[in-house]
Length: 264
Image 1 (cartoon, rainbow, N blue to C red):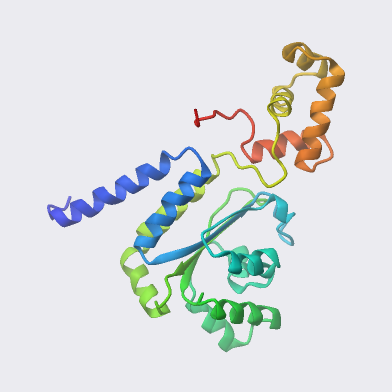
Image 2: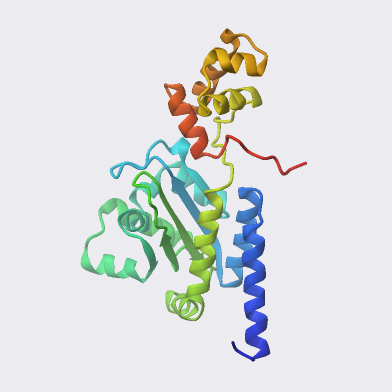
């Protein structure tokens, strides 16, 4: 172990930040904590995306995406709202690769002529928004249907050479923070827009997940079988699926089932 007090202080600070991140109870809290940490390394603009419905050819329904960002609305309205991400070179890289890459690769892509016209338009848009230097991380997954990645965009004024130097000094710590953020997010409840369940719908799905029949659930919840079926039908509609089995799977993916509420 190092006896240098400065080294020890840095190590303790890193451990403290990591501990705070692991103890977060909500995605919002984890994201806020992470943004503050990344800003200390010079990455002041972040864009995280995750889906469990990737088919290899498609990312799935955008309404099922988990997207976290601190970018300004004028950027996200175009990049996400207008689906520019579909033609973003670094999104393509993240879908085709795992690990870390410097945005220096964009220059190499341009020089080799592999960028499509649509991709060049995304690069031009990013340049107009002063999004020119950064790193991307494509997270490893044990599921072929799950894909997650994060873009770490350097603060305005930093050149890629400077960002690469930051990574040379702190890249291992930065990658560790992002990997832990991603793993933490996978454990936390997430409700996509217009896909929230009522307590009754959630309880009915939980009993289905436990293998109970409609008659069992009716007795357990003190309801009629028809009312249970209504809750399950509304849960399917809320989650935009056709079968109750799909609803259970999707709610489980989103950690909407068997959730402890830490807000009290």
